[in-house]
Image 1 (cartoon, protein in one colour):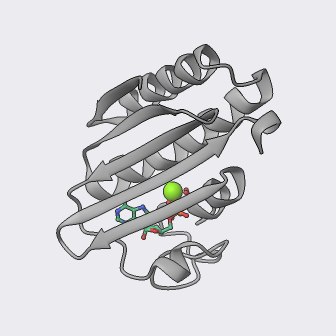
Image 2: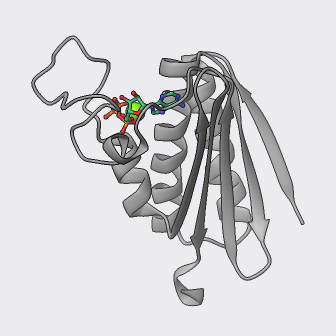
Length: 141
Ligand SMILES: Nc1ncnc2c1ncn2[C@@H]1O[C@H](COP(=O)(O)OP(=O)(O)OP(=O)(O)O)[C@@H](O)[C@H]1O
Ligand SMILES: [Mg+2]
């Protein structure tokens, strides 16, 4: 099984890993539109790594039954409340829609969940976060 792993340590790496994800998914046969979707997923996961954990890594793996597995891993602070983090417009502590001091809009992880077929989050306070998503080619779904 093919696999590649890319380290993330700054904003520039978001673009590098995004392009690598596009190339990888194109090569294993995803459609043009699916490749763009995967690019969004990779971009959201990697920007969270830079914002919250400073550094980490993203890996791509092709799945036998016609899919891709993307794993984003870091040793950062961990996500305090996964349920809240998966709600639109929320950080893992509170609604951030009207909190302009906050980093983002809180739409990254909910988008990742909507755009993929399977999502698993493992997170431990001060130990880090691992987010594993799988996406199947439309013809296999
Ligand atoms: N790798 C991570 N480590 C620690 N906390 C994280 C990580 N990824 C996400 N979080 C927490 O989960 C919350 C939700 O993440 P999400 O990507 O949905 O929103 P956001 O990053 O705040 O905003 P946006 O992605 O819209 O710019 C974040 O506010 C952050 O508190
Ligand atoms: Mg985000």
